[in-house]
Amino acid sequence: MKEFFLTGFIPGVGVGIALLSAAYLYRVLRGPTIFDRMLGLNGISTKVILLLLVIGTANGRVGMFVDIALGYALLNLVGSLAIAKYLEHQGDALNAMD
Amino acid sequence: MQWIDVVKEPAAFVLMLIGLFFLVVAAIGVLRLPDVYTRSHAVSLTDSLGAFFVLTGLALYAGISLVLVKILAVLVLLYLINPAIAHLTVRAAHRSGLKPWSREDA
Image (tube, rainbow over all chains, first blue to last red; front, side, top):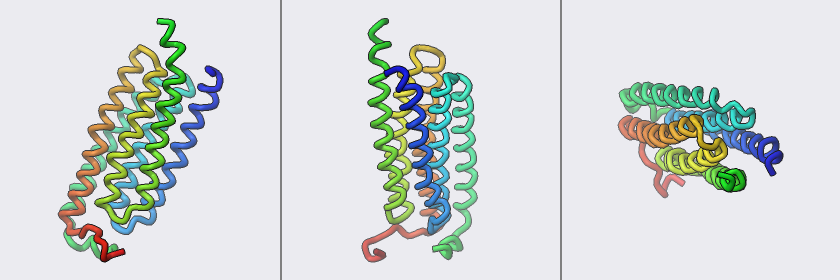
């Protein structure tokens, strides 16, 4: 059980999470409006944070990866905040992208 | 604390499977729902719940250490940040005049 958990199950969870981010990538590439692309990016960064912790657990070095995950979460907040504040003042011109 | 070593791997297994289930549901929602306002539910609510279960499983597997506290910090941060970003996106969409999907659009 212990062998299987560390070498089989946890890398499997990582591969599953990485495959799921393909759905978000589709939304980023094909999203009709720019807000769909922002939501897709937010979902992908959540997946990246989870993937960092899963990879760290599989390598037995979570202590390093968890700090990177914290920093990545904060960067995600700041970046999305800046983009959202920028788009808020763009007006109706964005609806031409439908 | 012998019993926690016995119980932590099956418990983490079950928790991470539940988390993967919710992540799959969120991905299906992102693909299938009709517009930004509905998709934001899949991204903020269901995705956060899946991340909660996966991170709880990892924290349980890490055992009582500093790593456990840091994983819980990531969990709390995700739970604060994810709905906040979804709210920001939807508010920007609303203020720039994007109309919500209605049944006539289908």
